[in-house]
Length: 237
Image 1 (cartoon, rainbow, N blue to C red):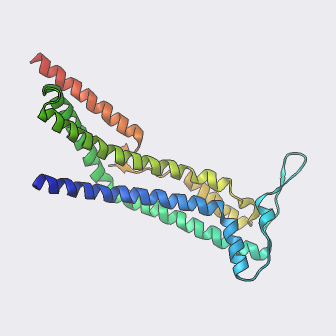
Image 2: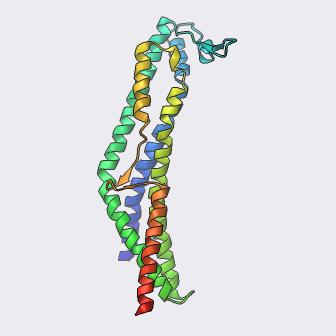
Image 3: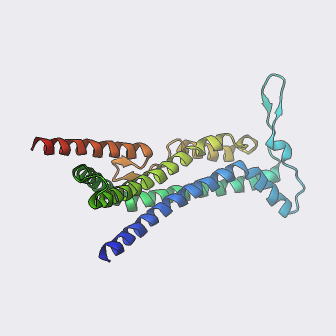
């Protein structure tokens, strides 16, 4: 019963960390959608306040015979609402970065202990599996435990990898948005956002290991190396 309660407690604690990572990823997806549709939001705000300005022609610039595009600036009132939408997007982006920094500060060293302990446990489990006969009860129980430990680590790495990949798309999405139709002040704000987004959000384990699928593969390779070392020592004895 104690082991079961301990297992559920560990699972609940891990689920909190997974939840924060999933939430960061979801917020980045919302941010990407906001960047892609900020002109639509501007149109809605204009219509809500009674302005009959059609922004459809600003979404698709007119192409010239020489291959360039003719970009028209938004009219004055539309610029005001577009600037409001962009400011809201930039503030949202900063809050996501603050959330990611908070998660990094709170869980970084905990994840380092988790990674180091898991590497040692996986190594020991592989060593015990090499001793017990296949299909025996100890072999089956150790196999289940090894699977659970590997699943715990791969979920950390998978969620961290997803956060990195989705945050890496922000700069590209912002660059391909319709920012050219806005005024210079708004363009500078978007440029600063693009510059910040060039460096993707990376969650780490104690500032030593990035949470990514590459790190998981390195962990498994390291555990396999320790296993071969222990097995060789056992054979020599």
